[in-house]
Image 1 (cartoon, helix red, strand yellow):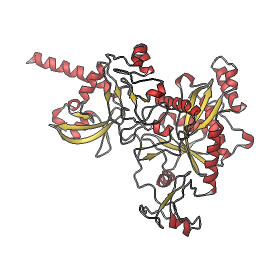
Image 2: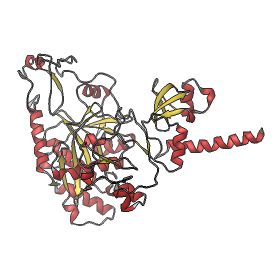
Image 3: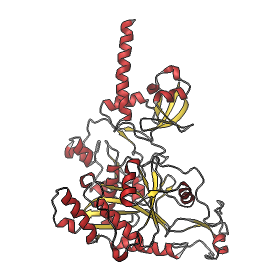
Image 4: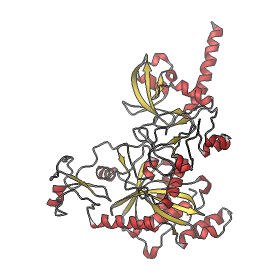
Amino acid sequence: MKRKGTADAGTKKRDNFLHQSLFMPKGLPDGAELAYFVKGQKLIEGYKQGSGIVCGCCERELSPSQFEAHAGMADRRQPYRHVRTSNGLTLHDIALSLSNGQRITTDIGDDMCSICGDSGDLLFCHECCQAVHPACLNLGHLPEGDWHCANCADENGLGRKAVSGESSRIARPIVIRLTRVVKAPEFEIGGCAICREYDFSSTTFDDRTIIFCDQCEKEFHVGCLRDSGQCDLKEVPKDKWFCCDDCKRIYGALQSSVSNGVQIIPTSFSNVIRRRHLEKGLFIDEATDCVQWCILNGKSHYPEDLPLLSSAAAIFQECFDPIVANSGCDLIPAMVYGRSISGQEFGGMYCVVLIVRSVVVSAGLLRIFGREIAELPVVATTREHQGKGYFQALFACIERFLSSLNVESLMLPAAEEALSIWTEKFGFTKMKEEQLMNYQKQLQVTVFKGTSVLVKKVQQIPNNSVNLPDNFPSE
C-alpha cells in the first residue's frame, strides 16, 4: 500500500508539472472556452484568462481547483481531467499534446486570404492554419498532401517540398475556440443619435427608417432628421450619405489620401529616426532620409496596396495574440481589410503604414468617427525594427493628418504595461467611464478586455510641424 501511495504521489507531481504548460507562453490561449463535465453533463462554463479560469456565472478568475469546487465537485480533485475545451479535449489531454510537440491554433475558421483579404476557395497551412488563395501564391494547382506556408516550413526545416505540398509527419495542431477577448458593452448600443430610441422600420420607408452616416457611423431616424431640420429624405440614399458637412469633408480627405498613395514623411520626422539610430550606434544610410507613409483602405483593392495590407496584418499577428470575437474568429484580418464579422463592423477602418526600403516596418489601424473623436485600436512595429523611432514617426504622421482634418480627440485601448508610455510620452490620459459609455452608446468603438481606454486632444499643428518627445522609449 505504501509503495502504491508513493507511485500515486509521483504521478501527481509529474502531472502538476505537466499541467503548468497550459498557463505558460504557447500554452492554452486567453479566451479559450472551457467547461466542467461529469458523465457528459456540463455543470459550469468559463474561459481561460492568464493563469486561471474566469467563471461564466460570477466573472471571477479561479484556479482550476477552485473552478472544480465552484461546479460542486471539490471532492473529485481532478480538475484537469474534467475541464474540457470546446472541441471536447480535457486540459490533461492538451497538456500531454503540448509536451509531445503539438501546437495550439485558433484561426482554422478564418475565411479570408491572409494575402488579399478575400474569401473563396482557400488553402490552409497544415501547421498554423493560415488561409491563402493558391492564385495569390502563384500556384498553378492545389498541392497534393499537407501544405505548409513559408514561415512554418522554414521554422520546421521542411524545405521547398513541404511548401509546395509534400506531406510531413508533423502532428496536426490542436484547434481551440476563443471567446470574450473583445469586451462587449454592458448596455444596449446604437439607436437614433437624436431621440436615443432603438425602434426602426425594416420593411417600409417611413419616419422610423434608420439611416447610417457613412463616416461617423451614427444612426438616425428619417423622421428625427426632418424634425430637427437636418434634412428631409424622401427615400433611402443610393450613394454615400453623411450626417453633416464635417463627416463629408473627412470622408473626402480620407479617399484623397488613399488615392495619393505613398508619401515621403516630413524631414522633422525622419530626423527623429536618424537620432534614434545614432543613440543606438546603428548604421545610417540614405534610407533614413526617404522613409514613406501612406493610408490604406482594405476595401479599395488598389493592386499596389494589397502587399502593404498583407504586411500590416502580418505585423499585427506577429506582435499580438489573436483579437477574438465571441464566434472565435480572429478580428485582425477583418479590421485590416475593413470587413464585417461576428456582428462587428470595420468598414470605416483604415490602415496606416510606415515604409522603409519598400518594407512595412510599423502599422496602425485608424477609424475617424467624425470631427469629435477618432480611435487607434491597434498599433505595432516589427520586432526587428522596434526602438528605432519608426513608430514615433508613424504616430506623428497620424496626429498631423488628424490635425489637418480638425479632429478634436484621439482614443485608444492600452494594455497595462504600455500605460506609462502613452500617458507620459504622448500626453494621453484615462478616459472617464461616463465619457466612454456615451461613446459606446453611439459608436462602435473598439475596447479590449483587460485594457484601459486613453484619450488625448489632437495637437493643432501650425505649419505642418509636431512636437515629438525627445526621450521616447523603445517601441
